Length: 598
Image (cartoon, rainbow, N blue to C red; front, side):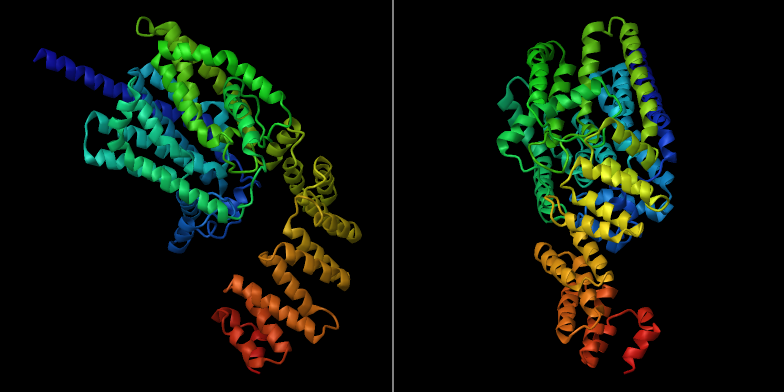
């Protein structure tokens, strides 16, 4: 009886210690990021994900949820749960940013708590589990994922990722179909939050099945891991498909396989360097422009590979760390192009787990905490405090557009987008100042259609229309064009009665961007409202309005355009048919009533 009582007492004590540490991790993580709750939305990506996305800023509904499951919007990434999470926030809190930020902090804290439970089981040590979770949670590299609302996908996928591993771990300890299905369900949710978690089956294999007899362990793991592998393949297929048809389907760095392979060592060492020396981070990192970065990365890896090969043999936790870092880094390695940028702090959200395990393994190897836990506690406390200090110092950078993009211009002078976004802050209050930053962006990259478009907008606002014509015109001839330059150039040419030039702009723009709705509908409006218009102009307007209507069946402007063109061509009954497509409320407008009564 006494032995059973002792065992029960030990188990109860461990459970209490686990619960205390779990809630301490959540509390400390919230404390580390609580200041971010007062931050604003950011003008980069937040509009596309939340504030200016009509499928999100109208809240959670059946039609919006369906859209989230079948579309990528302008983000080019399939993550329906992430979109639905943002939709739910809008339904609950509107567009008040502090509550959206609070939800981000909540999900990151949950992810950290789950990691503690996994790490404690893995290391059989509350001490190591606590510091592994805390260092991972408050490291400055996490700021981008937590403080930037557009990176909700990192936090959701991370929380579900850890929930899947923990459920699988519980299933391995006490097999029950519910725990297994729970793990698989969490994995599916992680994939639908951000598909970069596709490597989780490999993580499960390393943690629970890998042995020296490799092929035997693979065979033994297949029955349990096969559903996870199938889910990964399905998610990868869906992701590739949606990227190919999404608004950024043409995103590519235009590098050959060999050139991409040369970037791999640079990408691999980048996150190692950022972990050790997390100086205030750039938002945009561009691919290396010379072999210097490759040479530095190879010089770093040269001694590290044999050193860590030896350490992996000596300490299992280090072996776990090396394996997990490599596995979780693969989706963001750069070999497969998923965006404009080469590397980013936000890409390290899960891969950094491997680096933290390596750090904990090194401390364990050096101090042997089972014999005396004090040295390990002191070392890990100092490391955690150092990272916490840097995290608190760097977090305010993300307070708003002004602080973020001012910092970006200071530390990243190559950045094209930083002066554009910083200049946009002054669009209304000081267009001259805004123009100076757009010109700075143009100086950084003469081939940027975005910089020229913003220059033209400011010049027009300052009533310098001839300068705006030049800027928009140049924007149609650069290597990085934007369809909006053609649209804005056309509108300005129409205002200045430059009809010949306007028609050349229409022909050139629609030839290059045949599916650009704003350009098509504005071209149609030009022909319809042109002074001294001919019947051919009306026919041109009708053809373009018909095209715009076929692209957006319920769009009011397209419907009214078709009706107006038919009306002026004398096709009164056809015009009425289009007007009847409008909503009952829209049909109450006096002009529409007048047309319907003819």
